Image (cartoon, rainbow, N blue to C red; front, side, top):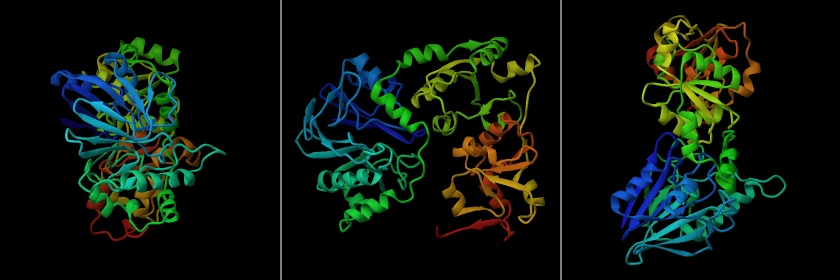
Length: 471
């Protein structure tokens, strides 16, 4: 028996490959399916099942393409109603994979169709559970993503989750391995550990939601407290996973189109496209196409695209480093943005060499900013981190202006003001600066290095950083 976790840091997402005696199962695959095909080929194995723990909201699964190319059966838990050919398993139904078995445990709560897959080894011993978004390390799945107005509330779902954990998961042995669907950084939970796997016994001991003496009412209150609004693309991705979508092969063919500067400009105007510049932020600030939005490929690219671009069908043009064009199309497709229509041939350098207009982002280093900033002055300093980050620690006098909701809150700003922006390290603040500049805010100054650099610079100033140890 072979069990392999395939972890994608950009989405904090874990897919799984299970192989035994020439047969394999894939759990919660990403949109690009080549890694799973390559693993099965290396083992000389046939992929028999594509197992989906639920209709994912934070990414588009690769179940349809994987099933089409391998003949594998797509399997969902009870109550799932996919709009394509799939097998909806019964609670406690056993699937055979080579010499091992996988039992489908219906564990509603995160969503109503959520399932946990229990892997038993060749000797029939419980070995591991693949919990999807039902149980994380240090947390449980949020119960507010599948609510239906007038039908089911987040409190209802939290109650179902309480029952699922107590009746299906907690009775299992402490030595059973927990393989969750996500790790720290995912918006699918609140307090996830940085670890990507662990033992059930440790979760029973340290996970707040698995306390043995916890009442149903206490559980419901704790798991529903402190939930922030989910990213706007979540329900759209869940619908794609349920209803179906285009093959990624079609998306790639459309997206990996090399466009000259002239063709790029024409497509921008004719298609009503948005331009995303995916280069490193240090390169972007020195020069970029006026109107382009920065979302760098080397950080949380896909989640930020999903948070900031409201229309999944939006035509997208992009600027990329040479050789990374296909990667960008794939990572857009991971979160359902299936309409990239090409990239700038020769990258930003070709734009410059043809004499086209360019823009820049003004920057003040942490040292430069700290030298003149006084909290009592009327300097407009925007902290673009999440509200929870701001509450824990921020620069005195800064206003919280979360990047997540920049489109909604734009009307709070004055185009005649100069705004200084910072985040934790500089990535999000450059995104925010690019969006503001594209909307006509000409006086925008980024502080590279973010709060980390500012804090280190101002260690001797007690009036600079405001810390809150208790929220």
